[in-house]
Amino acid sequence: MTHFIEPKFHQTPFPLLRRTPKSPPPISIRCGSATRELRSRLDSIKNTQKLTEAMKLVAAAKVRRAQEAVINSRPFSQSLAQFLHFIIQQIQRDDIDFPFINPRPVRKVAVVVFTGDRGLCGGFNASVIKKAETRLTELKNLDLGHTLISVGKKGNSHFRRRSDVEVDRFITGCGGVSVPTAKEAQAIADIVFSLFISEEVDKVEVIYTKFVSLLKSEPVIETLLPLLGEGEAMGDGGFRLTTAEGKLKVEREVKRGKLGEIAPLLEFEQDPVQILDGMMALYLNSRILRSLQESLASEVAARMNAMSNASENAMELKKSVSVAYNRERQAKITGEILEIVAGAEALEGF
Image (cartoon, rainbow, N blue to C red; front, side, top):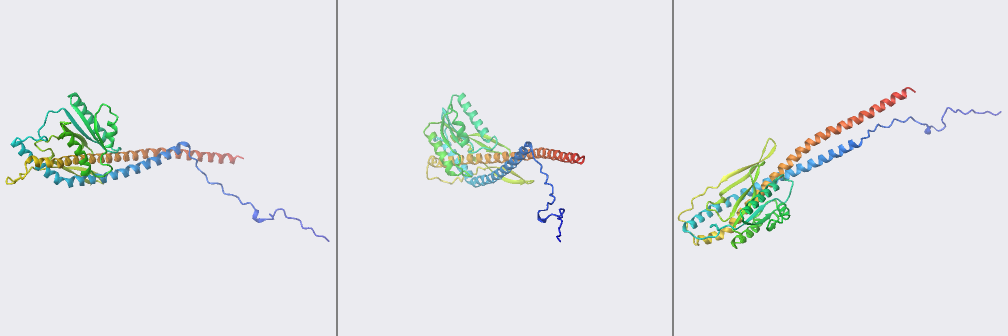
């Protein structure tokens, strides 16, 4: 007798192949082109803000170094100015002819312009170049010849494009040195000395930016040669870097050197003219070095202000772009949620 076993089709012969219900895939929010552009712009603003903040800190450190350079050179500048004033008084009393203190008829003027080597410092370079252009126009209206000595890459690039301006020499600032040194000043002093002593020019003027405060610096014009009897180099000052309410602040300390009395029993073995002639190199070096220091301090202060303003603008722009990005993203999410709900309600009707 044969027995047949009926197959049970309701059972799966291979349990491992039994299908298990899959969980629905996670909902992905697809950002549109506008959202992607806003996010890309927001990242760019954040990177720019980091860069400007770093440049602000670097400029603040350079302001401190400029302060130290001025303070260290103060005793020598005061003593030199005092002694020069005393020697000039002796020469004028004895009616001695000395080419550096006796002004001669001015036919040609040499103008030394100090600018920066870099940009991103607001209107620092533009203001001193504008001052130089104004002075050159005044000399031209007075029918006086003039020659220009440009110090700094920004001034060099500007005056190279001016075919109507006679430029004697192009000099590149401090050559990347953080603080000006006597070596850079001596190179400029040698050029000025040779032009004046050979009577190629009858007067030498310097145009540089004088540091007044962190928020203010003004271009000034000073006479370098011939020497004035009152002693122009008597003024002295320094910079002080402070923190008020968590913010960097630079203040200028103005101290006027007092003209002390030189002992009347003091005797000089050499003639006053020989002594003054030997001190001219020190005088020119000191004055030009001081102009470089003032110009550098004004440049880094202007750069610190410019980077501070750029950081604040980046912060404000980041807020506005973040608001626009969040609104766009929220609108996109809300739209997709509405589509999902509408699709679910439509499926319930079947």
